[in-house]
Length: 396
Image 1 (spheres, rainbow, N blue to C red):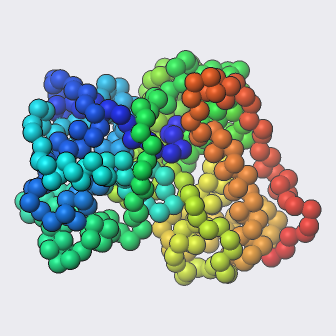
Image 2: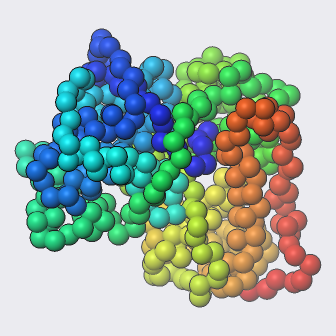
């Protein structure tokens, strides 16, 4: 449902109150929005590194709201609110500060994300004095800056060492994810494949939704059955047709089950990770390679019922071992619970085949290319054991 690569919107629509309040909306250039919020949230006399850290957090949080269609998927006609109980402080018509404006001009198209994730970090923050939170402390950032911390050190102090800055994101008005017309039995293309992937992920939390296998971009009986189950669970009209209300609900629930709007997000997908076999992994290990292992298992579990989805924690616990054993059993490998090169390489081949289809489905083509993409059929991915093996024999 989401674009593969986030972009900076040219404008952002702000609701001047709480989400359900009877208040007007204003649409302003995104860069002006950031200047307004920064001038409302922090002091221009603070150290430059503190200002830069806070501004990057403001950009990232706002972009997270836009990227996830957080409010629009709930039926609202705005991207973010001015209420600090929900979002960030925006004072319509206020003046801004020169020192803040200068930094915003430099970094407004940079944002934060966790390494290996796609979505902008939901970089929550609070003043750190009258209000504390799990995110960045505004006054605490100033204190760290006075101790000589640079902006990256400040951000990682509060958000973790795996936070990185994505520079120079493209600037363009994001198109709504809804394809514009309802999807129904017989339709094919990227939008159908996206919808199938979302339903498979949501079914992990709502097992009454049957799995769609394979995710092939073809709206057939399996897909209609899954759509009807989803609609029944979430009190929508049960017609097997994915109109705007059903599409928005799918987007909203997908964001919720992956915690994409939270600091501790499960992440959309890994990018730029080193997938080479690290060394034997076993229960008790921890670190980034364990996270990659858990992510691969989590993705495959959406397509292979026999594999339970482990939580992506970076800690090789018993749940991860059980998922490894299930994969080895499904793949016909020795059931050791250890991840040697044979298990890792086989798992990666299966994962890569799935990811290849999903990356096509998550592409965000535009103009006439979008029509071609929506019409093309995606090849089915054969998930029967051994179907994707190379010619040579694989052993544990």
